[in-house]
Length: 258
Image (cartoon, rainbow, N blue to C red; front, side, top):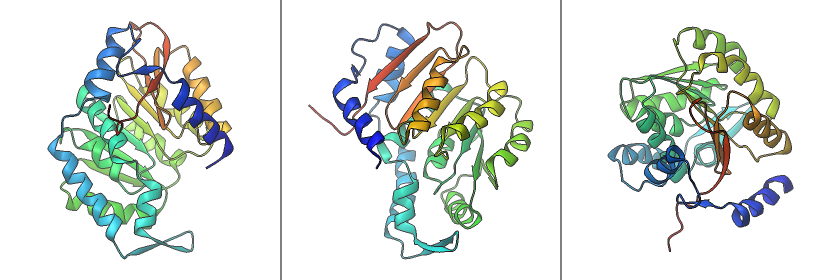
């Protein structure tokens, strides 16, 4: 963890104020927070994906990435979004019902499966950088029964034009593979022309370093962007021109109970 990350986490803990819908006047955002982000229903698909996570956590296998042997449990911990936040991705897709979903940063495929799980008719494309990792994750995605996931492997910027040309519209975009704000913005430059009023954007790692945070601030300031929700681990972006432009600093601690 960087000093930048820790400083912003402390700020988030003490300064985030929109908790469980309190202080939110927008009907759209209030419903989004109370009926989607904070929803507690245990969808049965959660268990299916978490079984795969458990397999990863207890695996004795290793993968060779960039010439280094790395244990699967270590990769699962480092590259997979935790259950409570990954399940928010499921609920967002379940709410907005996108036809085309694109994930940049396949990782171990946990978030991939949560994004694809709400509807087998979703056209789900995920882009991974490492062939061994992508092959390993894809095998478990298929074993779990997800046939609506298409996997592209290679340099993201080289893969994007081909992927985007196959989509009439980009309805849901998850950017999870960037360690530099410039990478985020380069990807968005290609993707945004395909995104419309009803599209949803999720940017992960917005406080990993100064570059990522600066990119997040620039995204918030975009004229096309109407509403953003900062959940610290990621940011949610909405483009509907009917919405009043506003940025919410959302207090989200899913495992905290009064």
